[in-house]
Length: 75
Length: 407
Image 1: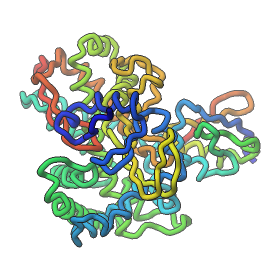
Image 2: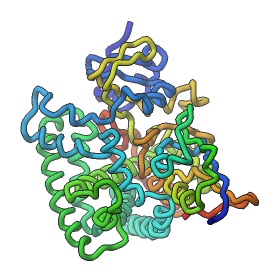
Image 3: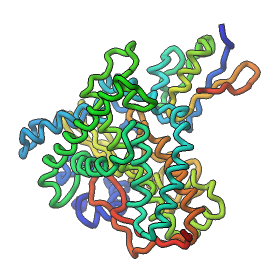
């Protein structure tokens, strides 16, 4: 069991490619302004799944933090 | 009275912005007999249409057999490019995209950065040593050609082949005007056949000896995904990436130099602080981005600004117009290299947003930083810029410069 991560989307960067939604529909959906929004249960998903989904974003718009607020490297 | 809107006259191809400005203010959802299309020019409308379910990107296949001048040659060509990811809807689109996007993840793209620095430095040194003035031929064309060859896994020495194929395909994919329209299907067909044979050779090589390149990634694609790519699909994808990743980036770099250098105050700001290249590139993308118009097909009736748009109609999404909409941008006709935020639509929006946008931005940023630092006192050697006579694309035909760098 990895760390619990906090997920956010930079809506200024998001261009609605929707790759995160294809990759991890449990964590993301398309919001009313057509940018990705984070679903409530996202933080319960595994660290690996979240890092993979964040890495799939061509705009690097998905940001992950640990519970101490430290940014998680996305590779 | 509505003037006749014709975006293919010599005057409109040279400068479409006055027509766009008129349409935005007077008839933002305009039916054009001339273009057999709806012309959509306001930012909010263009941005919204990227997400309308009534709008389809599957815009090539419906043309097969429809044109009055259809021949078996034109139909075969359309059938081939009709499978391109850019002209398909989900689920075909989702599958193709899922297979190719790993190659465009930011972490993969960032690895190309050191190489892009090296290639750009070499090109600029060669340009200085040559004493030539043709910036497109020596730099703006060469850099994306080298990067795309690297990415695909094709030898850079074959770049002249790519140039011919890319130019000939542009005739059909971007909609050329004038006399060159006549034999465009035959030319594009020869280009696609040539590319197909070439990439089959590379696929066969990489099947047994995979490298760190896109063709290897595609040949050995994830078997867990729905259906791996066939050789025909890989070739089609390579042709698309070669074509889409090349000319548009060449145009971005050349348009940047052609547009920013004559604006002395802007250019001097950039020389004083080359880190402004980042916002400056966004501004050039907004001001005269490489894609002027995107075509879309209507698959279900809908209403936009009281106009009834019907199934089977064609829509022209005018990105160049949206990006100068005063409802969205302050002083849109002014080039301001420090503009931020800059939510332009130059790369599109939604599931068809350009997958190579970040790569293109990195290439342009490195090229511009190096041009302003290594070519002191760069000046244009031509009175007026000449733009390509193409409906969908925006780019300079040629760009001659002088500078004071010593070889």
